[in-house]
Length: 299
Image (cartoon, one colour):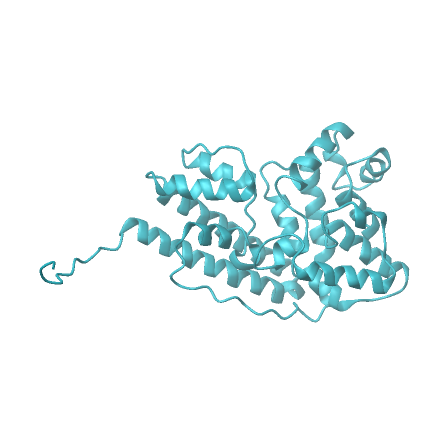
């Protein structure tokens, strides 16, 4: 499986050429529908639910186009990598562009271990997000699994994950906006919660959440849960989701021991999220009691 083929399937809605190539790949062939169906599925997945950009997974903000995205752009420039898609996608660290850069390096007999290490620190997580996405077409789940397996094969050639400066999380972080910001940033929470996944948690908890952006859905979910008796169930479901992600990291690490240092970092984040959610559940179960202090007669 070439990097170029993977790059094309991540970058574009399927066309006859890419579908013909996909039919020759054993793990993808059973999931191929017609081009119109897959085109709609591509938009639903990558534009509305799982954003395939590096800084979404690596930056504490969880946003596109964080500063490190432009470091990737500079890397492309130095190596002479300038595909037309650079001006078509939302940021230079799109998964498809990154995979295409690996193909570019191979074609020129070049190696960039630092870039490979950076890619291994987030793209397997993006793949897992696609694989766990309720709204994803089976073709794209299979593509993500294939990409993840191909990437993890490269882990042995890397020296380990790039250094990071962990962001300290204040213990008193209880404001709604802080909770939402934390959970929606994989680099902090250790998992990716899509708009569709958040909606599914709301439905399972017996709540109705209106259509909106990922941020809007998350904020509405917590706000509505806090105003009703659904908060314990929502927190429990989030803990269960975090546990599934943790198990996925352990499984990937067992399959490819060279990726274990990367998995360890993500497992640390998941552990922190478990503790935060457990603390929130305890707070909901046993709200802190306010003590009235007698300051004497009013004057």
